[in-house]
Length: 392
Ligand code: V47
Ligand code: SF4
Image 1 (tube, rainbow, N blue to C red):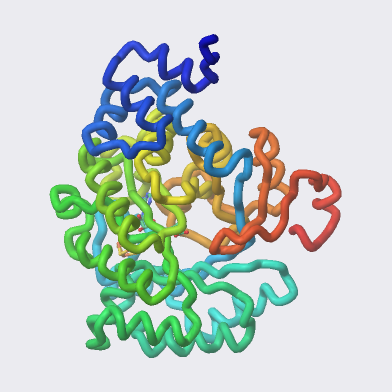
Image 2: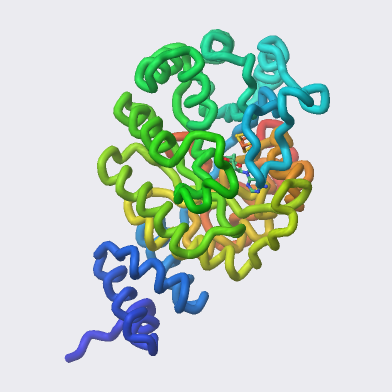
């Protein structure tokens, strides 16, 4: 008797392009796809085909589970020594009166405003201010941990760290060790943009290059810290630059295993030096997420950052490989609203986030930064949550 094919096998068998069909077979058989395969998926595959494959992998890894966390952001400053062409948020030091700089006390007031609220993470990222040095941030880490030891501090992109360490004349290892000892728990994925020099020269020529970014994450992983990785897509890069970017991350992850999640960031074009570049379409966005899920086979999680995509499109990504929607965020980040995201005041209550996930027929799981499960909301009623202050 011939065994009946399951739905994904049927989809693969029905694919008319033989090269795409053999990529599908590799994925089904848990074989790694090559750079050429990745490129072919971008160039030739239809959204239903990559989407079905990505969804199959997502469900093989996580079933219906969809993670989120309860976090808030602190952006210490938008004053920045660099001039990334896509950035709508930064202000040069010479124009610092147009921007903001928070003192350590002001940041502590933000931390204290969450006293008694069940947030688990603070995400600290900002511009690269020439006067906010390593010592300033060591003291801040210590103050945050002294006030709230259970709060996970995810902070500083490799761009901020590279500048901070060079200025303090310490190696990456020395700098990361000191910050880690002071309270820094993990690194966010920002600053990666597109690694390939052909693109980096056009969009962010003056900040740390690909090797520098990767070295900082490698060092953090070797010190036992976890980190994330981003890719800013949908501007002047070609498909091959995306594959090159993902390949560099996949290789480092093979070595260290320290990355938790891959976060594609959709380029938004308002009020920056790349406003003439059109934004990607929703179909392109979903295809990017799907190919990322298929290519990044050693990254446990794929995150859609809802403040930048908009909540409806973020919900859609849950059918294209994504298993994490970041967090409640609490209206505390400006980097996307200033670049034109539809989310001008990004904030969702836990009940709203849970409801967004349930509408997509997925299972909402609150996690901590390292993906330890805190609570499964499958059987918890959102209306009941709305009336319970703990969830707001
Ligand atoms: O590196 C800046 C991006 C990043 C624009 O690790 C833009 O959990 C789109 O990395 N259009 C910083 N993107 C934010 C970041 C991040 C966000 C959420 C979660 C995590 C995490 C990390 O924002 C920058 C840059 O790539 N960005 N301007 C823009 N116009
Ligand atoms: Fe500065 Fe970051 Fe903006 Fe680049 S993206 S200009 S490094 S704040």
